[in-house]
Image 1 (cartoon, one colour):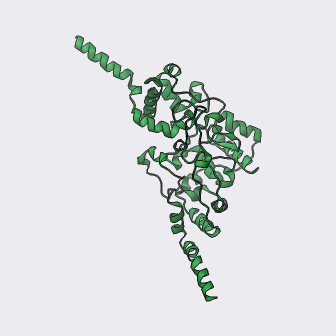
Image 2 (cartoon, one colour):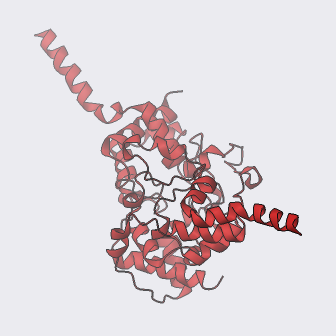
Image 3 (spheres, each protein chain N blue to C red):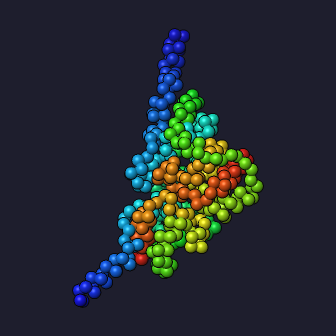
Length: 117
Length: 226
C-alpha cells in the first residue's frame, strides 16, 4: 500500500511539473534567437532594444519577481503575448513562430535563469 | 594605341562577362553572405543565429528594383545592430550595446554590376503566391495616428525605428521601408513572417488584414517624407 501511494505521489509529482520539464538547453538557444534582443544576452532585462522602450523588459534573473509567476503564466505570455496577461504590447506573441514544445523549452530556460543560482 | 585598346578591352572583360551571366555575378558577389536558396526549415531556429546577411532567395518578391540597384552602389546600414544582434551585443552595466563601427560594412558594387545584380535578383520570385494573395492597396493615414498605432498600440517600435532617432535597433529600420520594399511584400510579411522565413525573428501578427494595412500606410507616409 505504501509503495502504491509513493508511486502515485511520484507520478503526480511528474505531472505537476510537466511544464518545467522542457529542454532547457534548447530553451537557451531559442532565448538567444528570439528573446535576448529585449531581455538581454544575460537575461537581465537590458537587451539592445531596452533603452528605446517605454516599458522595461522583464529581468529574468530576478528570482523574487519570477518566482511569483507560474510556469503556466510564463507559457501563456510567450505564446500569446503581454496583452494576454494584461501586460505590455511590447511583449509579442510568439505562438505563430514557435511550437508548444519550444515554448516549454523556453520556460525551462527561464527557470534556469531566475532560480537555479 | 593598340596597347591601350587591348588594356581597355581586358579591363572590361569581367563586367562584360557579368552582364552576360548575371547569375554568376550574384553568386560571386552575394552568395558568400546571403542565402540564395530557401533555408532548411528542418534545421530549426539555430540556423537563424548563423546568418551573416538576410536571405535573398525571394529578392524579386521583396525589393523595389531601382532602389536595389542604387543601394548596391552606395550601401548604407539598414539593420542598426546587424543581421543577428545577439552575435554583436556586449553586456554592460547600463545594458547591452552594439558598436555600429564593429559591424561589417556591405561592399559597394560598380554601377554596371549593381544594375546587373539588381536585374537578376528581381527574377528570384519563389513566393509570388504570397504577394498575389495579399489585398493591400496603398492608402492614407494621419501621421499622428499612424505613429500611435506603430508604437503604443502594436509595439512595433520595440524592435524597429520609424525615425533615425526613435525605436528599437534589433530589426531593420523602417523609415525607408517604403522606398526599399514592394508594398504588398510589406503587408504580406507583417501578416505572416514565418511564411516567408521559417526562422524569422519577427513575431507573427496578432491582427487582421485591415490593421496590417494601417501599419503599411504609416510606413508609406513616413517613407514618402524621406
